[in-house]
Length: 176
Image (tube, rainbow, N blue to C red):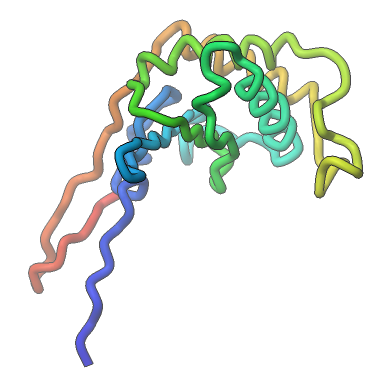
């Protein structure tokens, strides 16, 4: 029986011991003649600082998704906005192939909007949301301000990649 070679997906080839908060192109997909670009909107230092609490992340998802889908410049290009499973950031998928630098002003605006947001969380009612009690606007605003400030102080756009090492049997091992 032959062993099927399984390649690590590109996001697992990023060196998570060196990544800093920023905006990174995670992947580029071709859909016929169109592109879809996935961005890693990294808000936290992985494995170093506390992750975003699930309640705050849920609120960030609702407020930023609503903001992005209403932004005059970008709303027709937004495909998806949602949290990473590791709770250190979110993924943004857009139509086309903009650079992280082109997405940067949008993210600054969106997170400044979040940090100043007051009122009811959009879509946070039993009829609109599958877990409407899992929200924390105060912490979402705090996380939004922290990330907006980090982006403005030291924007980062280039992934640190993990080293590719060969084991004794010639298999590629990814050290991340």
